[in-house]
Image (cartoon, rainbow, N blue to C red; front, side, top):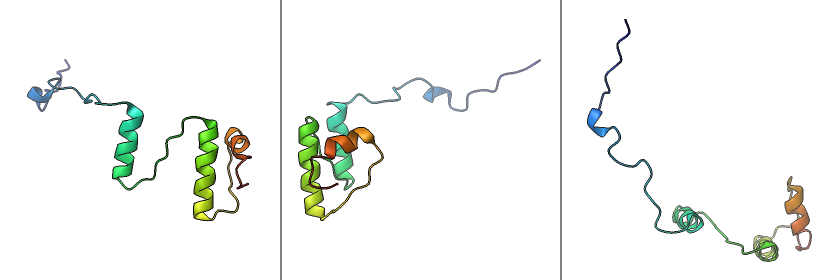
Length: 83
């Protein structure tokens, strides 16, 4: 006859939510936490804004050429001064 193993911490089981609700949009939460960890983040409103911001980044970093395996992204960035 099988006997179930008792729960090691019965008072901790199911008493509080696993995830805390966010106080703002998930995108904003991610950006704030990412930059707090010294990450660089740029929010783009649309494809045109993406190309503009990427072009500015490439110029600031002195990038002459970029390798990208994503065909859609490559097509979007063709207008940038970096190829």
